[in-house]
Length: 391
Ligand SMILES: Cc1ncc(COP(=O)(O)O)c(C=O)c1O
Image (cartoon, rainbow, N blue to C red; front, side, top):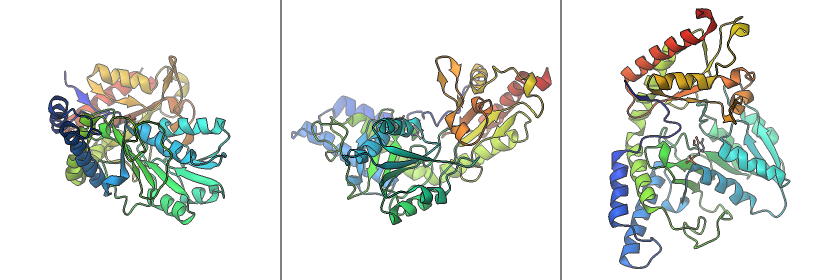
């Protein structure tokens, strides 16, 4: 059976060049980069080379790259690192479509007495810059807005939002985990102070990521320890994973322009085959969109809701496509067996029912035209079989 992986927003297959680099570290250059002897210094050199490569991917100096255990830690470091600079609770602004790596730590802050504003989004999942302008207060210390939304693919107007923060002298963080390596990001031009990235979304290994910290921005570290990573992230670095991340970043940088346009053409080809289907509505913004990302809600045609088997959710589609050898994912989280509506789709104004029916298909380096056409055909067949009109 054909096997087609279309879940590259969840993770990407580790590329062979990164594996080769990691293998070399694990077998030959396993020294502790903090050690002063030859073994240690060889490892330290590898970490610094990787730092340069990851920095190049977003056009910054290596000193601004802090290696972490992934995007989640980078997000937490940005939020908590700023928050812990203050003795008293202040005000923080995020969007209503953040990844849980931002929304969960921020929920914790609320319990500690911090005030939080969650900016609304339009039906396409976009924040309006004037909403940010209106939400800023005298004690706002941080704004964090996701760059590319993982579930619905929408890109935010980060440059405009960052300009507003800069004008008001408020720190601005963006979770760019889904964007870096897929679209060019240049922090020399983009008005951001902090930016999160993750290796396993760009064909590097899992368990490593980085936080970009603009020179001069003060953070309080999350971990106390040996003071590695410019004193911001104690703990012996994961040298092999960092080396793999570096290689993946370098290659992503070389391929980014051609790959982004190839992927967006493939994505549009899939979109064209699905857009007129009576059982789907496309979610997210059509124009301001991650190049590899397509998302739908599976809905019955007008007037057919009553007849629809309520058990048909995004998860049903994920299972059915999996049986056909196609790996995709659902938008909505599953808690203790019950299908919860996706908070992202709810924030975009969809009903609770529709918000349980989200799926996303995310393409990658190995996706071909044949994969797309096959997937569209299989998906249409499954929908026709599941939906009430065809009973
Ligand atoms: C937007 C976004 N932020 C953060 C993360 C977390 O990254 P990691 O898996 O490296 O911790 C993800 C991963 O799915 C993501 O899509």
